Structures are given as structure tokens and as C-alpha cells.
Length: 222
Image (cartoon, rainbow, N blue to C red; front, side, top):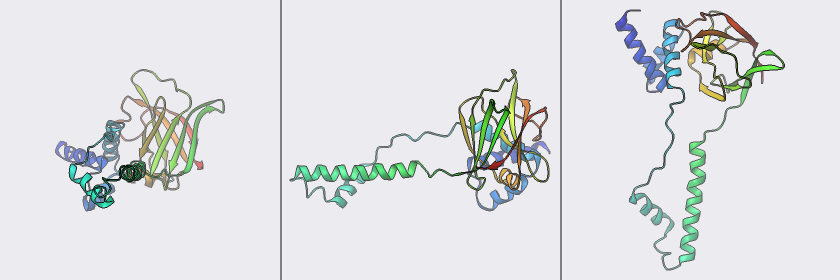
């Protein structure tokens, strides 16, 4: 891939991961994801942006919003009735709090497939769950995996046909949740096994496993 083309594809990969690549351009780019080089660029941006999602902060509504609420609830008419006024205010605050919970907490997808990555039933390293129709991936660390400095562990799906497709780097502790790309969902369709390879820090530079495969796990219905 020429340097100019690589720079363009890298910018498109960044927009794809951020979700700003829309419409026909996004559909055309998704067809390129089958290329190991393009897939590696997308994975690099996913790893780079993982955990950087902005937190929702408090926002003070403008005065016009409060006046609109007063008008809808007829609070000005209730000014001479303090008890009724505060009851109306409390009811409106409860309503907006309940609505805010539903807006900020989208419904959780159910697990459809799971894989246990282990050395033995007594030494389980990760529990991997596919959520929804292979839309999202959840990884839970059960036992910390020994790892040398400068090395990383990368998760791969072994599709029914074709080369392994990366599902990203495995965490060393805690839980990790990520949205899967179109190429990853395609590779997972019909796949029955996941694998873990030893890679340099940052993951495979080629889009394919470069180090030894340390673990292979079965994908089973949840």
C-alpha cells in the first residue's frame, strides 16, 4: 500500500471507529475490512481509543427551559399554594430523573455465545461473551495471565473459512467491553473456536497472528 493511500485509509479507519463515517462511504469501507492491512489499521484505532469514551457531565439547562416547564405545569398559577407548587416540582424532577436513566443507560444485550480460555478447569484466565447478534464482545478476567515485558495477548476468531480475524488485545485485569466491527461479525458467523496468540505490545503488526498460539477455546451457546 502506497504511503499516500495508507494515510487516506488510516484517516477513514479513524472515522469508521469513531462512527463519523456514514452512509455509502461507510458501506464501501466495510468491504475493505476483509483486507488484513485495513483490518490492522481499524484494530489499531480501536485499541488506541479504547477507554477514552467521554463521561457525561452535568449540564445546566437555559432559563427558557425552566420557564417552559413552569408553563406546562402551570407553576406560576400555583405560586400562592406553596405545598402544591413543591409537589409539582418534585413530580417533574422524578420524571426527568427516570427519563435520564433510560437515556444514559441503553438496554443490555443478552449473551448468545461464550468461551472459557483456560489452562485447566482450575486455571481459568478469561471468560469471553458474545452479546446480541455478534454485535458486542465482553471479556472478564478471572486469573491474571503471566506475560513478559514488551508482550501482549491478542484474541482471534477462527472463522469457518479464511484467516484468523483479530478481536483485539486481551485485558490483564477487570472487565472489557467493545463493539464489534462488520468484519469481526462476519468472521464470527459460524465460527466455533477462539484463539489467543502472543504478540508484541500493541498487537500483531500484520493483522494475522505472528507469535505462538497459547490457547484455543470452543465457542458454545450461552
